[in-house]
Structures are given as C-alpha cells and as structure tokens.
Amino acid sequence: MKAHQANRFASILLWIGAVAILALLVAFLALILGRGLPYLTAEFFSGSDGVRGQLFNSFYILFLSLIFSLPIGLGAGIYMAEYAPQNRFTDLIRLSTESLASVPSIVFGLFGMIVFVNMFGLGFTILGGSATLALLNLPILVRVTEESLRAVPRSYREASLALGATMWQTLRKVILPTALPGLITGITLVAGRALGETAILIFTAGMNVSRILFDVNPLAAGETLAVHLFAVKSNPLPGTNSDQIADGTAALLILMVIVFNLCLSIPSRWLQYRLQGKNRG
Amino acid sequence: MDKIVVKELDLFYGEQQALNSINIAMKERSVTALIGPSGCGKSTFLRTLNRMQDLTPGVKIIGQVKIDGQDIYAADTDVVLLRKKVGMVFQHPNPFPKSVFENVAYGPRIHGETDKKKLSEIVETSLKDAALWNEVKDRLHESALGLSGGQQQRLCIARLLAVGPEILLMDEPTSALDPISTMKIEELIAELKDKYTIIIVTHNMHQASRVSDRTAFFLSGDLIEEDITSVLFTRPAKKKTEDYISGRFG
Image 1 (spheres, chains in turn brown, cyan):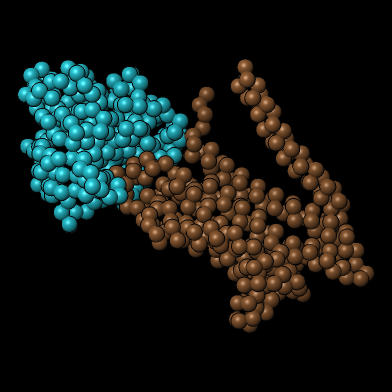
Image 2 (cartoon, one colour; image 1 turned 90 degrees about the horizontal axis):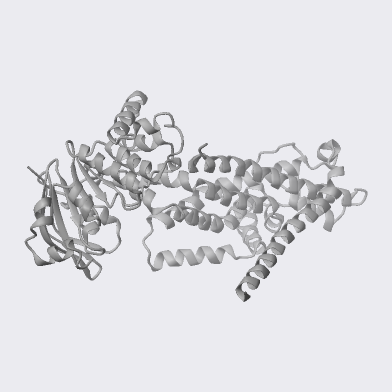
C-alpha cells in the first residue's frame, strides 16, 4: 500500500513539473510577443532606425560561424566517436572540450577582442564576431556529434563492415545518416545560442550597422538583433522610442529562433520517421 | 574439397586464452554446425573466419586460417575482399534503417555497382534466393525496420547474398526468432547449401542435427570433436560430447 501511495505521489509531482514548464513557456511567450508584436510593422524593419540590417547581420553571423565551426566540430566529434582509441590522449581531448564548454561567453568575447580586434587589427568586424562565436560553439558541437554517433547501434557498423565496406563507407552511408536527427538537434542548439549571443558580439562585432543594406563585407561591423536589444535598452538614444524598439526586437528574436528551429527540426523528424519505418495498416 | 582449413589456431582476449589450438577443415558446399555451451568459443571461432574479430580491441590471433589455400591472416590479405567472399549473418537481425531495396543494394553499391537496372536485378535475385521476394516485392521502398523479425533476418541474408559471397557464416541466426520464422530460415539453409559453404553456430542441438552435414563440438575454447552430424549425435567418440548431447550439462 505504501509503495502504491508513493508511486501516486511521485506521478503527481512529476506531472506538476511538466505542467509548470508548459505554463512558464506560455506566460513567457504571451508577455514578450504580446508586448512586442504590435510594433512589428514595415516601419520597424525599414524605417530610419529600422532593424533589417541587424536582422540580416544575425543570420549572416550565424551562417559564417557555422561555416567555421561545423567542419572542425563534426570532424573532431566523428574522430572521437569512431576512430580514436581509448587512451589518455583522448581523455585529455574530452576533458578539454568539456572545460571549453563551460567557459563563460564573455571570456570568449574578451579573447576574441584581444585576438581579432586588437592583435589582427581588424577592429569590430562580422568576421571576428563569427570566428569567436564559432569558438564558443565548437565544444558543444564536438560533444553532440560524439554522442549522436555513439547512439548508433553497433550492429549497424558490424553489418556494414561484414559486407566488406570500409570504415569510411560505413561512416558515410550508414552511421552519419542514422545519426543525422541527433546532429540536427545539436546544430539547432548551437544556432539558437548564436542567434541570441550578445557578450561575445559586443566585444568583437561591435554595435554599429553598415549603412549599406545587406552588407556582405565580412570586415564591416555587424550589430545583431540581440546586441541591438541590449544597446537600445542600456543606452537609449534621445528622441527614439527605445522601449518600443526593445519590445519589438525581443519579439522578433523569439519568432526568429522559433521559425529557425522549425525549419531544421521538421525535415529532421520527417527523416527519422522515414528511417524508422512507417506503421503498417 | 576443403574450402576452409584451420591449423593450430589460438585466440587471446588480452591475457585470457579463448581458443586453444583449433584444427578443423570444412568442405565446399556443405553445412557445418558449431555447437557447445555458452562461452565455449564457438562464436569467437566463427568471427575469426571473416576477421570480424579484428574489430575487438585487445585480440591476438596465432595460427593459420586458409580459405581456398590462401592464409587470411597473411599480411597482404585485403580484408574488404575477404569479407565480400566470407559473409556473415548475426544473432539479432540487423537491417539498416533504410528501405528494403536500399538494404540489399547496399553491398553492391559499396563495391562499385552504379547501374540502376543491374542493381534492381541483383536485388530481385537476392531476395528470391533468400525466399523473401514474394513477401516484400510490393514494399521494396518502405523501411526495412517495418518487417517482422523473421523477415528482417531473411533480408539480412539477401543483403549478404547480393555481394556474391562463397561462404556464409551464421551466428545463431534464429535465436531471436519464433518457431515458424526459424523453420523458414532452416529451409533456406538447406537450399543455400547447393551454392554456398555454410558454417552455423547454434545452441540448439536439434537445429544442428536438422540442418548440418557435419557438426563440431566446442567446450572451454577447445574443439572436442568434429564428425558427420548423424555420427556425432548417435555415436560420439568422446565422453564430453556424449555428456553434452545427452543433456548432462550445458
């Protein structure tokens, strides 16, 4: 009887936890979107202090940082999961990625400023910002890649190798496609962080927007939406309606991240569904 | 003619010896069953024949395994070619999370076949040879994971036949299957024997007596006895074999 009661009690507690998360999310979205959505007009994007430049920069910096971090992060993760022997050296690599993953982002920002802004003398640039952002995301990418690959059943590897496939063929044609949903989740995570990051970008990409619309010059300064939100709130320009701009920007940031995640996760779900097999009947 | 000749084969997992000086020969186009209690080394031995044992860290192998007169542990052996010739079916059906077609086409593709028409032919022939064609011909492009366990195992056999092997190694291929699926696999083995040299590990002595021409009995890493199946089961030469097949241990 006692076990039965404890079981019920635990179920209720866990249920409350789950519902609380949902309620928090709803409250959060209602507040931010409720305040910000009314300001998301055409004027908000393309007016004299519109944010279309920042919006573009957010995605441009995200794109560049992924270009820098994906090959290295995926490569290192694949190596750790499939090729590396278990020894002190790989333990050391694993320990370093874990330590790097816990470095506060503002410290990365400072590092980026010292290296890219000052040592290389680039000044505040989109390039420096993306490169520093890539550093922030690398450890997570390595970790997620390694975990997703390890989650692929050993029997798939054996089946492929026993058919005379090389390790590389097995990796390309069996392991990576199977691990893809996990990898996409990892990339979504990393991209979400990149879209929302401020500390690093204030120090490296600066708080200015190019006067040219959609400036793809990586050596231009590039304020992103998140940085913009910080800027208008912390240092409102006289004569502008900074509160409205901040609310609108916050709402836009949330929408952006939601849309971006959906764009990645829907195809990934579909792929998983196809791989796992459709239900019969 | 002897297809596989094993001489003085020792295998060590780290310090521990798992196979002790195994000597055995297997004839072409015949079925050899490997029986024995769990941990006797029968699966370990099977996995030395296509060098899948190489994938286990810390394994050391001494001795000789000759297939068609070639020592497969010689330095110049191409493991890819070896495994193309010596295929393997595993204990648990392990189709890839791909369509039925892609599963069977996987082997030919990695060995360089790109012609679509030819791939379709290979897929059809292999599925027919594995006695699965009629059950899957209308769902070739659905995921293989939607098939039943028995169908999945026959799919794995079709996938293996598609690369054109000469020897089929089967590691307890029916231990995860129901009796009807088991029967279908056993019938399949009887048919495949005309073309292939088959070595099957089984913990089921009835299965060994039903499907095999010769049977080898392993115990604690030793090959105790190897003979014509009917002889081994009715008039074993060794006391240990008799104790095992009469159910006194194991």
